[in-house]
Length: 192
Image 1: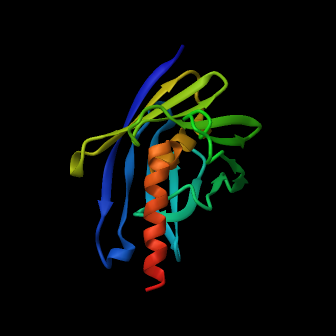
Image 2 (image 1 turned 180 degrees about the vertical axis):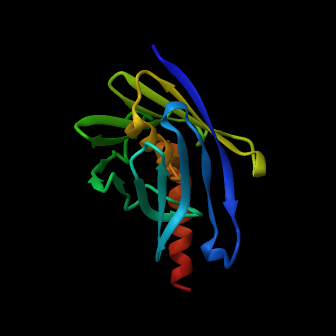
Image 3 (image 1 turned 30 degrees about the vertical axis):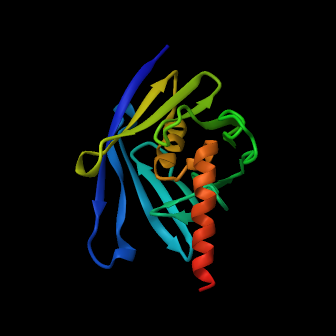
């Protein structure tokens, strides 16, 4: 079984007004070439969009309700190579596997799930391929890793990379509870 690990370094652009600041990861992923993740690449009111671009990966974007700097899974929209992708999830499931995102891209079924209690450990899985993502460090030393198991292609890598710029805490029960209380407090601020 093929196995490769790619590392993307964090970056940030804090020039101008704070509403125009952008963050992300960039690096080289072997034969796939350069990959860059940008969040929020666009802002539309209370919605943020994360985008992935690179040498061989298809242009991929994920938009959702803003949770900090990243889009969340609430009201999520995914696009790969300009085609809209339907995202399914069971927000009431009790297990990590049950709470996984389910997507179908180019005729292939994918699951994106939490692999640990920490919100930094996730995996994108399809038949014969698994890409485990993780984030380590803080500040200028923050890095993201993509550990590829199996014969992954550019679409697989783009999907895993775009999820680095998405708030996926809802994929665990404890993360969903925290997200619910954060959203509730934000909505209360609207009415004051």
